[in-house]
Each structure stands twice: as C-alpha cells, then as structure tokens.
Length: 265
Image 1 (cartoon, rainbow, N blue to C red):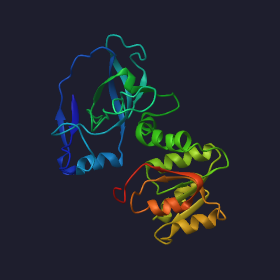
Image 2 (cartoon, one colour):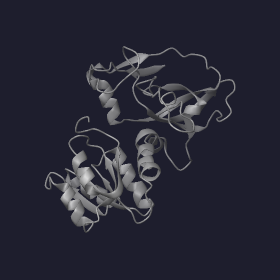
Image 3 (cartoon, helix red, strand yellow):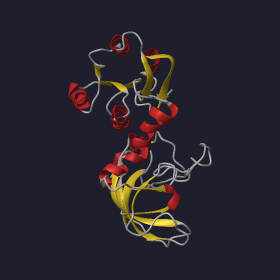
C-alpha cells in the first residue's frame, strides 16, 4: 500500500513516498479506500515542527479524508462495504464533553494520518458522507468545516441578524462565511488581497476590509456597524491581531481563537 510520510521539524522537503504493509482489521475497525484528502495549515506546522506530535520519527500526515469502505472488521455496526465516509479530527471523541482522553489522538500528529491509499480506523472515527457531496467536498469538512460550525453556532451561539467578523480568507473563514450566510448572519471579511475579497463578496460577504490598506481595521468594523461592533470574531491571526479583534467585539460578544498565523500567544 502506497503512502507518504514526513519528518516533523524537517520541513516539507522531508515528505517522501513509502510502502506500508496491509494489516488485518481488529474489532470494530474499517478499511477505507481514500478518494480525497484536504490539507490544513496544521499540516504545514507539523512539517515545520511547530505542532506537537506524539512519538518520534516520521509520521503519515493529514487529518482530513473521504473515501469508500472496502472492508469491515468484526463487530462493525455503523458501516458496510461501499459506504462513503469521512474522517473525524478526533477519532476517539464520539460524544459527550471534551476531555484530554478523548482528544489524545489526532490523525496526522497524535496518530497515523490519511495521506495514504488506504486508511484503517475504528468505525467511531468516521462519519457518513451524504450523497450530494463529492469526495473532494466531504474531505474539507473534518477540520475546517467542523471548526467553523463549532465557533459560529456552538460556542458563538449566533442567530439570524447577528454579525460576525471573519479574519482572512483561509479554509475556516470561508467555511464560516458560507455557513453564516445560510443562517442569516451578517458577515464582515478581512483580507490583504482585493481579489480574495471580491471572491468573498461573490460568496455573500456583506462588508469587505483590506487590512493592508486599512491597518487599523477595527475602526472600519466600528464604522461598518455604526458603532455597534460585532457579536463574534473568528480569530485566526494570534498575537498580531488579538487586540484588534477584542476591540471589534461588543459587550457580551465572543472571540473564538482558532489559529495563530501571526504567532503564538
């Protein structure tokens, strides 16, 4: 079975093709033929050594994949051969509140990743893919899509008529833009690129802010909301943007910290 592996801290240059032995399925394990893989900034962090990994040596990278079930092990009840499935970022967190035990394993860092022809995983670490989604579309849900949903509606508690500020046009922000618009939430999007902002407008963004041209973009947010500020900020920048994000959110509002592209905290 063909796969790729990377050595954390050795850079993207350490990515290499390898062959893995095919093993028998254990209780409640499923074998999935991988059809599509989506990459995240986290994968680049693993390559650069700025994301914690368990163990030492090379790892198969990637957390987000979709594919077809080709074999089921003993005791599997959720899936059958031929089912279309996508991975879960925390394969051992099936339900209930978050805990260190449930989040100890993450594909591509705390466990074997998905950049492989086949994936063997416990059935609890998979979700069924609806018929209207392609494998490529479904593969983008695992990390970015779920993160955006959780930030907007679980932790953020947004409802129709609220306003959200989305920093940048990365995967999480673009997912959040589409989900927010579908829920009737007003959206403000920032970017350093007018071309990307225009694409965001096509996806339904209500207010566009180029932070290169407007370094004090929190002031533009205040103007765009008539001083009412926003109900939620999706903070992806880190230490470089957090102060402005806090200035953009109103009393009782929230800042969802989901990234650190501008440096750690």
